[in-house]
Length: 148
Image (cartoon, rainbow, N blue to C red; front, side, top):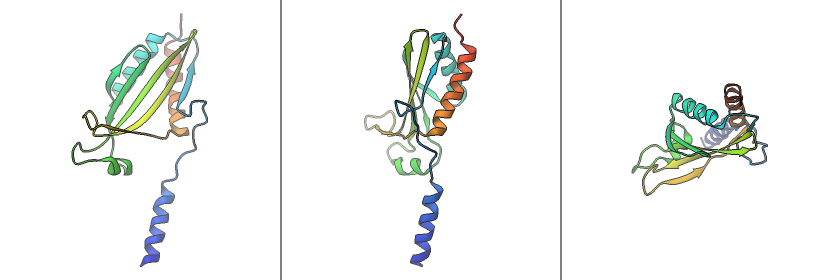
């Protein structure tokens, strides 16, 4: 019996194999958009996030913070509490101007007890899939928001 438990444990862990790590300078999803209108990019990002089920937590000229309740997963099961229920996923987008260009850096986290005084932020490890998604979104925004 013990042998089967060990085999099942290794099988479960093998299924958790993650995508390759990010190789950007910041170690986070990081994209440079060339010659774009910053206001247009910001509005495009906000609209896309709302369309995809994210709630806006805060926003400024250089930062957008969004969150949503985490879907059922192992991380959600481990971070859930009786006090607040399921954890939230939170993403902070930093919009850094660089001449006519705009650098977008995303920082991701799991949040337990979200929006309470007991809130605890658990940084999430981004991977190559997150970088690919950031690049794809940035290319769409770049095409729409070319500086005139």
